[in-house]
Length: 180
Ligand SMILES: CC(C)(COP(=O)(O)OP(=O)(O)OC[C@H]1O[C@@H](n2cnc3c(N)ncnc32)[C@H](O)[C@@H]1OP(=O)(O)O)[C@@H](O)C(=O)NCCC(=O)NCCS
Image (cartoon, rainbow, N blue to C red; front, top):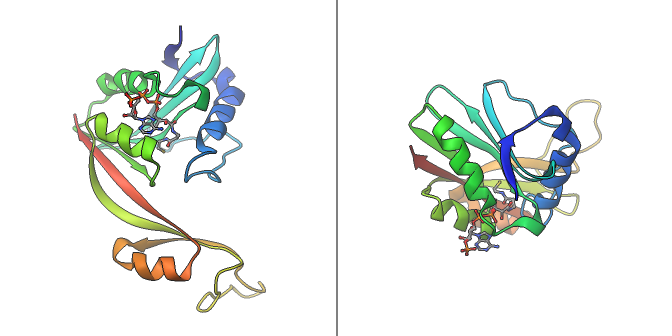
């Protein structure tokens, strides 16, 4: 039986592997971390474990006026068995704020899951990647650097058409909000 419990330092390697495999088939495929992120604010860090192997994880960072799901990932071999729902159910009673939010891109699994879990879509903006294939006009490198090869940028949703015309990789980043 998969158990939900607080993250322990001994989970680190298993946690990183679970996050990596979970993100690989998504629009966050290259959002790779090789050390466990730390938070400036307090955070609830939960894991779903099978015999101490991490098969799901959720970090919720606590701000004065809200809590934010920083990461939510279920190992691909363990999805659609209610684990993300169990992690959320374990996190919510620990939150002392009125609002829980999360940010995600266009993946159907994540969007459907947030909507079925009581979240409503709110703010949207663009994540734009410039690769070496994209036109470099307007990109200025700082002194001592030859040229800008790759870049990651934010842009308003209203610029979506223009961004897609110019850059090969554009994601719509969506904020989901749930009143607690
Ligand atoms: C989104 C995610 C966390 C859901 O985890 P999960 O444990 O499979 O979700 P649950 O079992 O609690 O809920 C299942 C429900 O979520 C939705 N869902 C999950 N996977 C889905 C998919 N591939 N397609 C459509 N809906 C999906 C459905 O509503 C599903 O209900 P159903 O199986 O009755 O149709 C998981 O797919 C995941 O880790 N994805 C990759 C990482 C990611 O996108 N993280 C979140 C944003 S950063």
